[in-house]
Length: 389
Image (cartoon, rainbow, N blue to C red; front, side):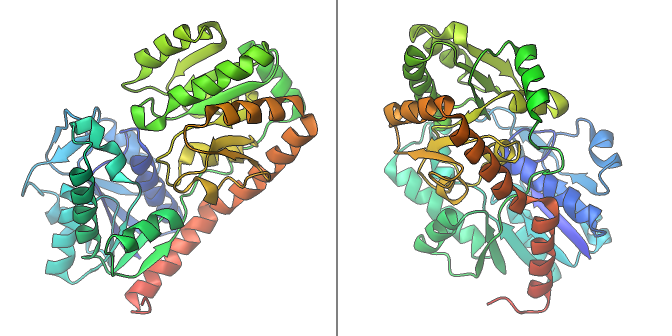
């Protein structure tokens, strides 16, 4: 099957949508499909990006988006790569963003008669603070715009039921299907007790260690995780916290950790990749996130695949992957005191920690590339055959 993937964001950009779009292209290519990606991402490392992954990438002229670091916007009517798409001759188009490149996918679908699938990844209204438009009317307009875009698609995919329900409530009338995000379950896996012990020694971890992995930005509520850790550290002075990632809130979070008196217990590692990232996860004991805006976060799924219990907030799509009392604990929004209690409970109870660890690993297995790739293949074929209602 020939598949064209449209996405305003793609590797080497670092964000959830870029990663999912890249993973989709890679998974489908490995399944034997011909895949072309159309994106506004920078051309950096184009050869590295495409040489070993089996898909091709066409770049549209674009400019940096100053309001959101690292992102780029395609120039209006600048879709010079359309000629490549036309030459490629896709059987189906899959869009991952409702912005300039996304509208290009609508245009390409309409003029060529090719079926269009659109995946909606996140709650965009939670990001309006970046453009200083965090108002009720702006949130309403954001949803109005988003739903209008996806009503041009033949089928809409959502990674979570939470987001799917919100789209429908906001006016989506096109068919919608839930297909979760995929992670590399062959790479992210638990360490043996011996290796975990060695890694703890390597990182200087004496006791129970928490980890957060992701973008360091305001909507992730990392300050709440720091508050929870600070309270727990008063009861157990040997616990530690590693924060993996980077972003606009890094300096503020470092200063906040100092204000809480826990700066010596919190390690800000910056972005980690590949083996270093895996070792850091394997050396840890609990993954914590206080974010209230998560849909289907890859970081949580990867932590689960590594066998980590999860302490999180029961908001948006999180309860769909974190089963309270099964592979972790869920607290209410901004309830960092309860999160602190959960941290202490897991750290102090080895049997509970092992139970949650095993359950996390099992639950994450459903997100393997084979499983998610198979669902995408089946969905594409049903759309092509007109069997989606």
